[in-house]
Image (cartoon, rainbow, N blue to C red; front, side, top):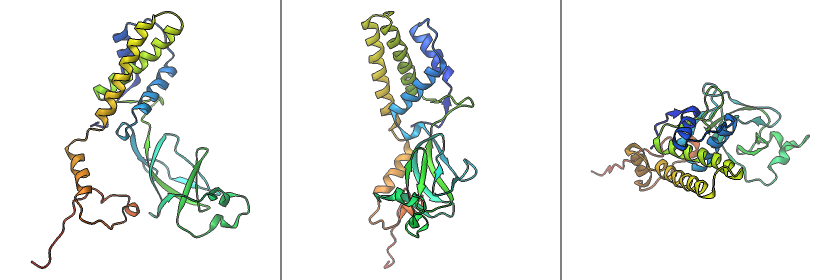
Length: 242
C-alpha cells in the first residue's frame, strides 16, 4: 500500500542517468510528460491526491448559466454534491444538454440533481449555485511537474519508462541497436506490471474496511447520500429478545 509520500522528477532523472549511463540531453518537459504517462498507465487511485472543492482544499465549482469549470488537476471524479450537501448523480438523460440551450424552459426545472461533463466543464441541471466535488488529482510540485509515489516499485517503473522512451529515440536515430532497445522495453513492461500489482495490495486497515463491507446481513442504507462514509463501518446486530 502507498503512503501518500512523493518524490520529485529530479529523483527519477538521476536514477535514469545513473542506471543507463546515457549521455544525452533530454528536455525536462518531455520527461515530465513521460512520468505523467507512466502514472496514468499504472492507473491506481492510491497514486493520486484526494481533493475536495469545498472552499478550503480547493475553491467551490461556481455554476453560472448552467455550467462550471472543472478543476485543472482533475484526474477522476469520486462524487459530487451541492454545497448544501445534496448529492448529485451522473445524468442518464440523452437530451441533458438541451437544458442548456438558450431560452430553454427546462434550465431551471426542479428535478433530481444530475450532471454531465463536456469540454472541461460540468453541466448540472440547475442554472446557478456551487458544487462540492470529491476527486482524484494528479500530484504535482510547485513548478507543475508530476510527482511519483515514494515507493521503490513506482520509482523503478518511472525510471524504466523514461529510460525506454529515451532508448526509443536513440534507436530511431541508429545510436543503439535493437537488442539494447528491447532490453529497455522488457524492463519497462516488467516494472509497470509490478507497480500495478503492488498498488492493489491493501494494508491491514484497508483489509478491515473491505471486510466490513461484505459482513453485513442486510444493508438498506443509501450510502450515496452521505458520501459513503459508513460503507466500511462494522455492522452490529442486536437481539432484543435476550
